[in-house]
Image 1 (cartoon, one colour):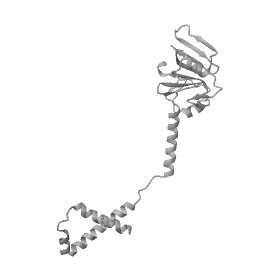
Image 2: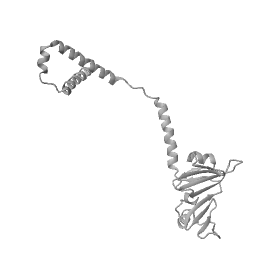
Image 3: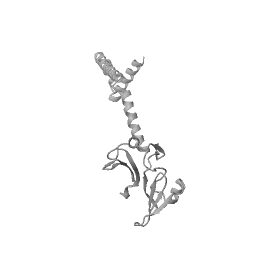
Image 4: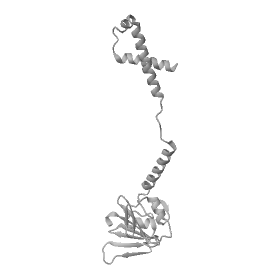
Length: 207
């Protein structure tokens, strides 16, 4: 029943689209054979449209497509989540007061004897170097603890850090560098043991 109704609609639409209504009835009544031929043509057209609409185009393996999409989304998510906005709760826009508020008083404050405006705040796990009252460098040499990058806890190993940050943006003689906008994180790697020796977090203008 649905097929006949669809065919009828198609026949009607063909008549309407032709725009030739005047004299149509008289011509078809006068020549019955033409009516049969016209009707047969319309039915053939309608059947072709119906068959074409029921033909399904081949689709790729849905499982493989979904799996590949999930992998791409996970890789993108990792890189987007770790934007190097903070390392061990310190950002590159902190001043001494905000660092003390986050980490407490440093064990020692050392002023550079050669460069004015350069101070180093020494903490148990890292040193924070200020330039004119703003964080310039964060140096992490104590790798017995995990790193906290953008609230993500990551073991202080080359493998774990690279898995979290993706492919490095720069490869140097003494390590690899990851860049996110103006922030950089460099992993210093021993050329013989291939082990991580220290980590630096700094602004790209400091290079």
